[in-house]
Image (cartoon, rainbow, N blue to C red):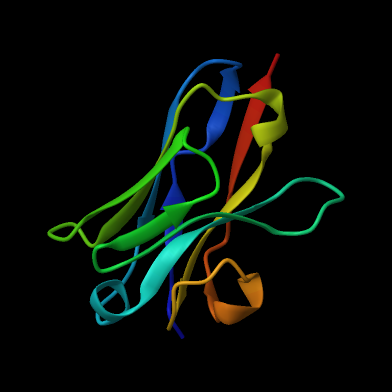
Length: 117
């Protein structure tokens, strides 16, 4: 079982920034696509960002996905946050770059992000 551990969530005002982190074990960190999904209350899981090697894609230009190889950590920088960004954010790992949550077999426990307007 692959354990992904997220951190960095919290409650902020609209317009603020947050940076989420996800620590992953090897070989997952170096060999798998890793990314972020989110789920707002009462809604389906939604793609946010994914990265594999140097390829990446995000759902919104306000979000930046990056990684620190030495720390085995994946990051999600979120800028100019809006109330509609409120959700539980999950770190994921899987074999391919994909926007489909079913393609990621490994999920973290989630971290809550709450944005108040």
